[in-house]
Image (cartoon, rainbow, N blue to C red):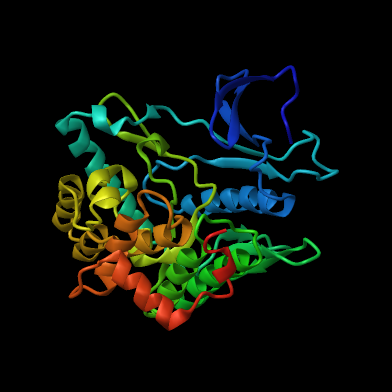
Length: 360
């Protein structure tokens, strides 16, 4: 039940890229955050908005099983356009954690050491929470139990949301995602200055999907920038926030190093997938703590490379280094040259019905 107006007040103090965050302050000094979606032209359809919010709620419930107290408690959730929602807009109520967003480039070496050791503890804790399917967490209707649900949605001709997933096999998940992009490209819903190149990329990815395995799946935070880690002045981690789009994935995606440790120049400009100095240091800490398996996963970028090739437009300035980085991971004995690759791919896969758009 919501507190009465006499017992609390709202303070809209933070606006992120997708959400308002309002402080809900109680008489006893406790503070919650009320999270509301920012309405704009990029807002997902209603079904997806509600699913994202419910999935984030379920993810926080799941993370309560961690032995490290760095995840906010969650107190309530409601959907947009729900007649029983007294607030009138979809919301998520969660604990307001202490600390401030990390600014990694300003941190001292001592602060980084403190941070990385605690980050290693988070990884070790997450490894104790295995799941068996690829998808996003939600609370099952009726039972209210946590389960892995759809990974994403597509839409019928009538505009109805069609959930896809959960998926048992890694290749089935990536196949469904890439085929959805091909379909959107061919019907014009996904635009690109050169749709043929986009089609050739997708077909090449389909021909080189990761192998299926029987390893457990784990929750992955999809936006592991420094701003989503709260820290104190010594860089002790006080919270990990913004799990809105978290998804259960294979271990090589879930336990890759967070984005804040990447050498951006190497990754986005040079097409290199070798660990940065800070990734290597993080891996060393994991080894020191007795987790050689996590250290190896934190030192590779297969999941990141594949994901970037799916979502990045081939005409963007950074695409060729990104695609080159993925290519060299799946074909380690081969160098990558865009022009010969394109010619060979065009011969193998054709234009995909998009040839009339090549110069249009």
